[in-house]
Amino acid sequence: MSSVRLSTTSYVVLGMIALRGPSTPYDLKRAIGRSVGYFWSFPHAQLYSEPKRLEDAGLLELEEEQHGRRRKLYTITTEGETALRTWLSEPVNAHFELRDVAEIKLFFNELATPEDVARLASGQIEQHERRIAEYESMQKRYSDIDDVASRMVTLELGLGMERAALSFWRDVAGRVERGEFPAPPAREAARRAR
Amino acid sequence: MSSVRLSTTSYVVLGMIALRGPSTPYDLKRAIGRSVGYFWSFPHAQLYSEPKRLEDAGLLELEEEQHGRRRKLYTITTEGETALRTWLSEPVNAHFELRDVAEIKLFFNELATPEDVARLASGQIEQHERRIAEYESMQKRYSDIDDVASRMVTLELGLGMERAALSFWRDVAGRVERGEFPAPPAREAARRAR
DNA sequence: TTGGAATCGTCTGTTTCAGACTGTCCAGAA
DNA sequence: TTCTGGACAGTCTGAAACAGACGATTCCAA
Image (tube, rainbow over all chains, first blue to last red):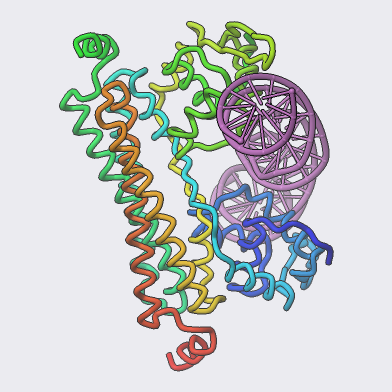
């Protein structure tokens, strides 16, 4: 019931419980893994500690505790719903954050060989194609479930991002083939000839 | 010279010094802020501790230490270059990671009002437009500097992502106007009528 | 020459993190 | 029936990452 600091992760937990109803940490883990986890990931261990914090803050309630596997069922309280709604209505000031190792490696292409870049690009193409297929099948699977439709909007952004990335890496692959990423020695020569 | 574990951040530092030549932490901070920082950000304090780690590992060398502001100039060693090149040639197994608060809020739209969603969308549209303008001006500014051209490829992915996001949020804004994100009560009714 | 802004560096306590580890449950093989 | 493996569920730990306050230095302009 005190003033703990709530992170985005806290609200993800709160929101998930609000949407799904009473949930155990493991329920949350799976539900998040299939949805929100695509644009806000965190280690699953947090799903065992975070609800405890939220309970201390009076935003969740521990519904029941079974024996055996002693699972904990959390329910959202009225205060929790209020906190969640307040957060949802607040403006988002942070820009999205992208963390992309492939992109870094491409940035440093001058220090690598054209073969490295080619491999990088083809690996990325494969990855993004796979992810696109995954998203598309999710989209198909859920398109007829009315209940979930409004959650599935976000899939479209994922898909848009993936397609942008895919076409970018295809372009990179083409450029490599055309010799636009010269090996270090050629690069030196080009620089001198400038 | 020991076997410290190198993170992506370590390689960003290493790579930046390899590209720019001898650099101080502050140099790195600024260079990263203008480039690689857009897809791999971290607190600037790390740029003071990380080089030390890399020096201990024998991958950087402390070139000179001045008095007054006692800046530290780091240079990459041959071992450092080798480590970097090795890393650059290794495949990237991780998929890029997106952390987007706006997206989460959209996912939870069922718990918010249509007005919330509308505000969210228009805020995002603004943000992405601004970022696009920023990227485009960077692109213009650097397009004639031959030296930097191959680093600037990555800008195109940034731009592609931003454009995908922008068009997504414009679409969302349109849907809200068309009443496709009903307020909670209407939503209940719709569910019952199903 | 002085004081305010921009620059540069350090420090601190807290979160987050990966991932190893433990325990539980169930199904089918022996 | 007992055994065994694998999926399921939860806990723990040390190391990194983190935000952001703070302190010091330099520069410039009034």
